[in-house]
Length: 249
Image (cartoon, rainbow, N blue to C red; front, side):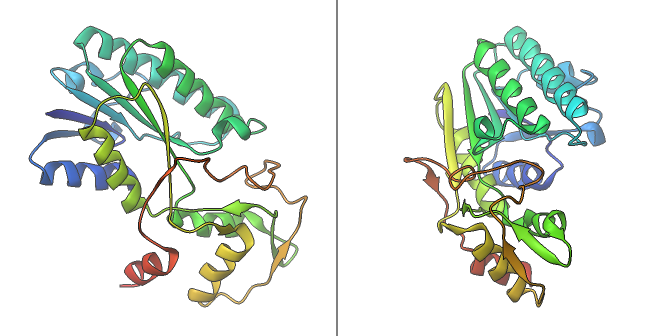
């Protein structure tokens, strides 16, 4: 198959491109770095010509409300228009578990608009909603460090390794469109505070963690189940401890 990965040079995209190439597919890593800009449409026609599957794992460069909305809205519309003209068989997009529950955030409002545009485009599709990546635990810590402590809300948490996200996307690429969303998550569900504490201790960080029911998660109020998938999620194999061991080498 000819497969185009929009955002193919990023954390997930590069891993997915590598996996698909190893299987012998003709894969294009499309990103501004390779002259393809889905937001402006530059290079998009040429990249998608003759493709069977398009995978969009691109992410907004800014989490600011308007910038995120413009990014996801424009890119979704531009990609869909070319997919329809080219007769693309399957559009796959990476999204986030809980997107519809995190609508206080302009970023997640933009992600929901992206999902809605994909659903209404008329191209067979699969939306893959992933939980938070292990690779972003450090960002959670940085964002939540307030008044000499890491303040986190009481919430269930089930993060996933970026490599497992790429593996799950590969399975979707090789399967049929579901014309709906599937959820993927790591194997272990714990608490946000517990998993972050395990990460900190493993990395030698001794800062204290405070469970604060009113603490925001990246600026958004959440409840106990905001960040975890529902029944039927496709659980991936890598545990936090396994990921920590791999990433320390």
